[in-house]
Length: 390
Image 1 (cartoon, rainbow, N blue to C red):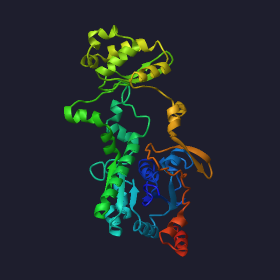
Image 2 (image 1 turned 90 degrees about the vertical axis):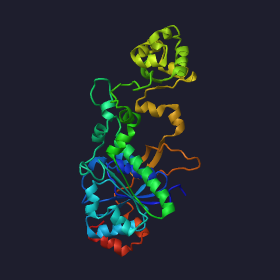
Image 3 (image 1 turned 180 degrees about the vertical axis):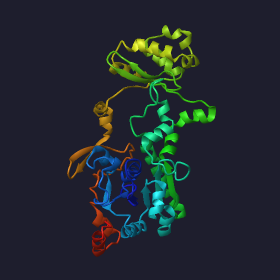
């Protein structure tokens, strides 16, 4: 019995934010049933990428797959029968679509008062932008992330991952778990919703509250930390390293390890306040010394002194690192067509629990089995298939 194995989740999501939400539940044992339109209705690959590609395989693992045509009355009726026995439904349609299909929270809770509906949108369920299509990069721009990413004067730069999609999925999963916990007390479900825009602004964290509390508009600072000095990227004799060392005690350790006691006597470096006002001088002083040894040696020496320091890896180097290997973040999944593939496991560890490692299902792979579990007879399944509701 895995932690979430008692939950039945109906997954109507597409692309990335919604599937990321459901994956958080599937990775801990929830019976997540991915519902897709039949092949003849959904003929395109869409934004989720090729089914057997890394993206699709990553976000839809540990789920079962069925087909249902929700635009067919019989398909919609079948979905409602599933809802009656489910715990959670997750969708990331535009807000008006679920109402048009008749699968909004009011409709679903009338079928099953315990149901929890998790909804993800681009800009919120109402308001002037509610009907706009949402996309990760649009949210990165509107949420402020692109304005603080990149080198000073470079102009807006997107993050290297779909951070709005991913964080929205995780926030929605957290909301669903909160609602499930509350349901233990009340016996009633909830509608939980968030959006790419809300999640992106929330992820701006202290950069956002610099504005809300003090009226500061954060700017691009490149590889430097926006407020902590010295924290940034430094060149060594054979590469680059990240060094993070704010505060007087950390500065003392750097001075001792780099043997720059004389240089540190300069007024611009003497106090934390002075260093914050003279970032360029601080960085130049460290840079001149760091060029005298290799990245590996500096990482070892500075960490031994208690100064957070690390290499800057390309992705192949990430998975070659001894600590990453020890953590076993890449885990093998046996796919019936692709063979053994390595995916990236959940970063959450729970000693004594081994999360499942099931491959992404083929379209409709488990349709008959799932419907039978929900009480559909063989004749009913055949009839649904005959009218193209499956």
